[in-house]
Each structure stands twice: as C-alpha cells, then as structure tokens.
Length: 424
Image (cartoon, one colour):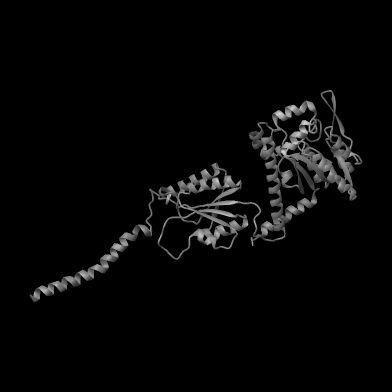
C-alpha cells in the first residue's frame, strides 16, 4: 500500500473543505466550437430543474441554433444588462442581478468570453469566480484551446493564436468536468450545414481552424485533460480518507542517475521512452552525503541540464541510503516505471545486491528497466582528485600476497639445495 502522510491527508481535507464552502463549478468541456457543449449543459440543467433545484439561466449563447433555443424554453432567464459602448448599446451578463437573485444553480455560457468594456470584470471567468465565492453553483462551457497552459501548443497545432484564455485552475478546481465530444468528420459536416456558425463565417472557419488534423489534435488534448483531472480527483479523495493504493492510473517514468557514472545516455533513453508512451517523466539523484570531485559534480550538473532541456522534471533527495530514499518516493508519487543504469562491474563486496535488484524485490508494482552504459561511459573519474578503489589496488594486493607465500618456499628450497651440495 502507498503510505499517506499526515500532511498529505491534511492538505486533501483542506481542499475538500474549501470546495464545500464555495459554489460547485461544473465545466462542459469540448475540443472545438459546435460539439454541443451548450446543448449538453441545458440538458443537464433540465434534469436538475426536474429534481426541484432552483435554477436560473444567467446567459446562454444560442448562436441562432433552433434546437438550442428550444432547450432554453421553460427556464427562468436573467435579463441581460445594457451597456453603452462607443455610441452603441450592447448587452452583457448582469452579475449584480444574478447575485441579488441568488439561485442554487446558474448557467453562464462561454467561460472564456471577454466582457464589454464598462462591466465590473474584464473577463467572464471573473464573474463566475464571484458567483462561486457567493456559494452559487455554476454550469459553464469552454473549449480546450482556451486554457492558458495550452496556448503555445494550440498555436503550433492550428497556427492560430487564441487571445481569450482561461486560467487552468478553473478546471483544476472544478467539481465536475463533462467532456462533450464529436468526431472531427461529423463536426466539419455540421459546420458545412451551417449548424455551428452563420454561413458567412463558416467558410473562413473551415479554412483557418476546422481541419481534420487540427480537430483531431485538439480532441486528444481535451481527452488528456479530462483523464488528468479524473486521476487527480481520485488521488485527492483517497488521500483525504487516508487510504493508500497500489494501483497506478497514469504511467510515470523515473530515471535514476548517480555521481559515479555518466548517465546522460540514460536520460536520452528516458526521453525516448516517455515520448513513445506519451507519459510524464522525472530524473532523480540521491545525495548520500559523500563528497563529490569537481569532475563528478560537472557531470552531474550536465546530466540535470540535459534532463531539463529534454523536458523532464528533476529532483534531488538526501539520505545516507539511496534505496531507502527512492523506495518511498516511488510509492508516494505512484511511479510505475524506473530506468536505472547497470553500474560498473565489481567483485567486492559480492554479498551486496545492486539497487535495481533491490527495487525488483521491493514488492512495489513497478517495472524496472536496466541499461548498460556504452564502454566509454562506464565510470566517471575525477582527473583532479583521483580516488583509488579496491579494484585499482587488487593487483598490488595480490602481488604482496604472492611475495608473502613464495618467500618461505624459496628460502626452504635454497636451504635444501645448499644442504644437498654439502653432502656431495
């Protein structure tokens, strides 16, 4: 079982208490516009209304879709707030009226929306944050490309810079995330039929954003985000209940490096494995308190620099025993794959098991992969402060033993031969 520390349990309980004090946020997440987020939100709201929940439609964008407009019928709809901007009368979500009405549940569409200048908040997610702080539950919608952490990645995928972004914490702290999905081919068909945008916008959208490759990549990003959220929520609940678990829902790779070998090759292998499996990976070194030579420290720094360059997280633990430090770390962080070097060949002490052998026999549900270093990287020597090992002295010791054993024999033979000569 994975040990749960008191600090972990306290943090998890505090997180749950803080969530209970605020309104609950339910996010209907999609990979792109037109997948049906608003329709799904209204369908879920109708079920809540049938259960007698006090519900208010704060703001819903139907974009002229008849089926979506039909879903709004029968709900109490909050009047929009008129705002004069550049001699134009625009309307926006009326936050003050929503707080005054104070329903149990309110629907606020398009979390990433930028409010009309003159509104209390610049962004709609700030309105939602105030509603949650007031203890009001909120249903909202957002597309994956609006998450601020994915902004650069979305640009690489679509060649379009998304200007309206939402802090990731809104998904991280959401009570529930509901993934609304459509295959890319179906979504493009809906767009061509005018069910997503008005005809004058549909063609430009197809040319700029709605390609099969773009939609497929965005769909994968959305799925991964939902999986991460489910994994994190389960871990938090288990920690709050002080329950350990042996199973791992999401693969994680740990690369172990030492100061006695050049492990840059191991880090490069780790990157290849992590990229192939599409999993997060970490590079770990245990400081056992032994003094490092300048060359060893230089090699270690180079290894960590390479790890960061290749996208790994790096970690340093401090303990007199590498094994005693690594074992609880693997359990605590639910590592399921460990990459370690085979180390240099040795004959002493022959009774001590290598680190990878002890990890295999530890009983943890972990895959241990052992790699031999290239011949020219087997062991790191410090040219400034060389340190002799037992292996280096073995020849001298064996020579000394030979002298000690042979000398009496030679002396005996010399005496015996001398006596033989005298007899003649």
